[in-house]
Image 1 (cartoon, each protein chain N blue to C red):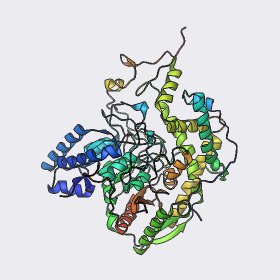
Image 2: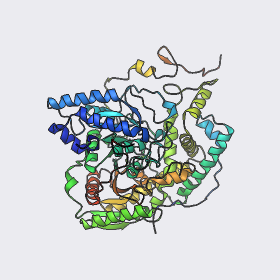
Image 3: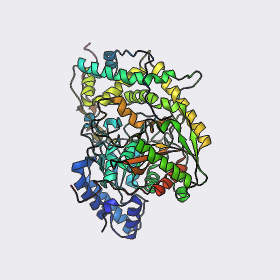
Image 4: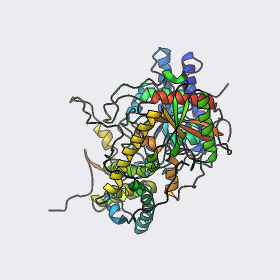
Length: 107
Length: 491
């Protein structure tokens, strides 16, 4: 008995609106890619949904293994990254700024 | 004369101090080895020959004036390529970070430099540490030094291959669901995941922040102790860093296991484990009993759900962490009519299939309407797993299992079926969920001559007892087999 296992199991039908999820994740995928990822994600989620079979009434969620409250440091001036070294990594820059395509429409 | 590249860290550190050889000679030995093995194994993405040579010269100069910075001074060290190194290309094995030159060193890197380590370069991994074979690297996989037709494991597969082959004396990897321990097991070396927060993650490119932990891959348990001593301890730059004092890992190494209680986890042993792997594990358990340990069988029912919970929590955190790769501040950019299109084109082209799959999974699991059923429920299951561990550690000082259900598998064997790949980590994931330390120690070979790893798990900050048991496992197993590619002569 015992031992690790992947329980074949289907609790609820997984039906992913994959185009919406890809848009939320900012991934420009083709229709073929979307369909392939939808099928793969559904297979994984059907197994991941096994967690729903475990009774957890009154069980608090754990977001972090070792509970921490905020970590503060003393408010003193310290060094920071070299601006030129940082900006040198930008795909596009203009002077001391990261350059991106227009965000706002023309007024 | 024996090859310097085959020395343990401990032996090399002694040789450097006795004057048997210099750090420059040690580095030359490791570079000679890498020159023979790299064409076959592809453990490295970047070899920094000049930087390493400078560090070796500085280490020797330090020894000459009795300036000793500890066990890693003059030791050739490799870093998984998800730890940022100032001015040295850091890619996470992803196309999206090709050519990226970080503007700072991560804390582990800073501590290694301060400790006089000779940083050899950056090792291959599954893209963004997502995978168990290095087959997800955008720059091609690494190969197993025991059999180059098989994977080295992953995600720290390049690190494990380098240490097993002798092209690094010690390597640092990261472990989110087993990414240090599983490749260590598949490559016949020691791999250790410290307690969550014991090693700073400042400068580790994040995958799943509540699970990620940096740790060493080495040839022996004592080497792992030395490698952990140099990098562990509180770091104000990492808000999740453990603020208390670092445990003394070394004192108990020779103490043996007499009087200790060793728990065998029912759910991680037996069915689903390759017979040769389980047989080697059972033999090791018997050896621990002969050495004076009390063996107790322990059931942890929630562990059966750990893999499922992991594949909700890790993708959810990854989908948030990887949002920073947007083509604005670093890395790849693809054009678009507006900002959103630029970002979407950049990310779709820059990320590989496994990373995209996990981002999609995580985005779905966090999206409105599904959050509580998937992510929230996985977090509650995580609580149950932690409770099961707490109960288990009332009955046992350490818990044991195989590290990986199988030995090294062939290329392509699991790439078409994500779930079968995910099963590689079924024995290692529980300790990431609980934040506890765990180590893999090589204990034998299967019929094909492939190494088998034995996992020792301990409660948070239980590194001393974990190392103590691991050292006894190592002494009893007498694992002295060598990888086929651990030689400077062949090929």
